[in-house]
Amino acid sequence: MNKNECIDIIRSAVQNGSHPGPPEADLFQPTSVIALFVFNKEIELLFIQKADIKGYPWRNQMAFPGGHKDKNDLSTKDTALRELTEEMGISRENVDVIGSLGHFQTINSKDIEAWTGIWNHKDRIRHDASEISRVFQIPLKYLIDLHKEKQFHLHSPNVMLLTYPYEDVLIWGVTAKIVYHLIEILLKNR
Image 1 (tube, one colour):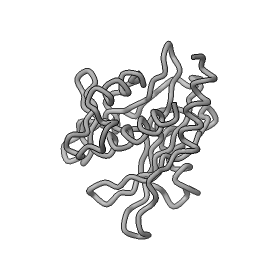
Image 2 (cartoon, helix red, strand yellow):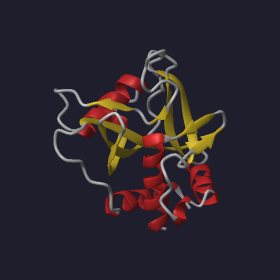
Image 3 (cartoon, rainbow, N blue to C red):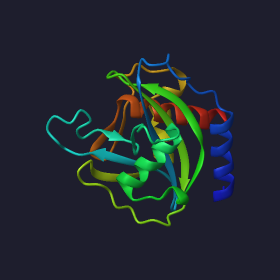
Image 4 (cartoon, rainbow, N blue to C red):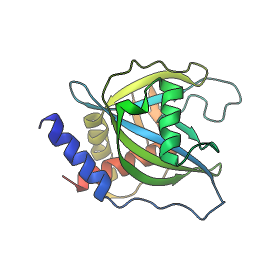
């Protein structure tokens, strides 16, 4: 399958998929992230590992680039793209935003709208070391194979069981929920 066929499948899955809606107004703080597809030898997703800072609530956690919605952000999509530039040095002009994967809530009252996009590689990643310790490009096929191996596609696993290990890190929590949802809509669209 060539790159354009893959992009068409991803675009169709995201734009035609059924996604979780937003929570009731004013119960959660609006935040957003962007799951970026990167086309190297194979399709990969871009992840960050949060910095190892004592007292930082997301210390060492795997995540997608993103953050809190500022008063100057026009939308959560705008938030995701602004944060991507601030955290990673990737300009919004170099991202083809596909669409929203819906809303995912955290235990600390954050509502994360997860966006998806395709990065064209025209920027060099320069991550903010005060927020991010490492950047990972994880093959999508690896995540899908692990999803199937753990039989996540047969049922919706408990959040404590919903994990995606990769090398020496673990994707869990709300990031794992977003990965789970993304893989499920991709598998349904095949």
